[in-house]
Length: 157
View 1 (tube, one colour):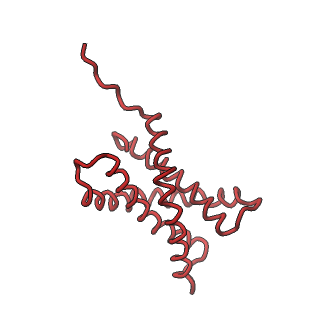
View 2 (cartoon, rainbow, N blue to C red):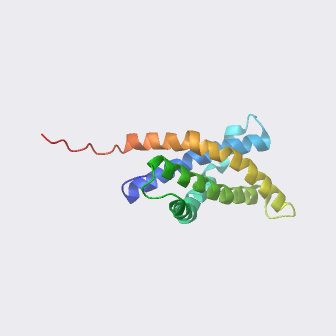
View 3 (cartoon, rainbow, N blue to C red):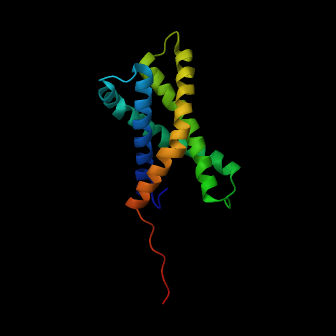
């Protein structure tokens, strides 16, 4: 979304921020349960995770996701179909990469790396897809359209 590079970067940043915040809470709760350190544990990992997510989104995933989506969805398809297709591919790519980041950050590259990775990958996908489609995507689009309203159509007199 966005009509220029600045707006596209703001949209991507908002989307990444909300997904990283919600997924960080989800992962900390899965790992440690609800406890008095929940907010502190999320805060500690938030900036590094956000930096990695933004890099992965901008440099890797968005190009691949959009390329795949537009091989499946025709340009004349309804906008909602385009948005949902791109969102699904974005979630797949981001979950693959961010689960790799989380596994390396918390478990390292040891003997049980693949077991940890695939476990985290599955749990993250289960949460990230509905979170993106039902909560974060609509929330981000709502906020973005309030920040950057579409210009009013010219009225003829």
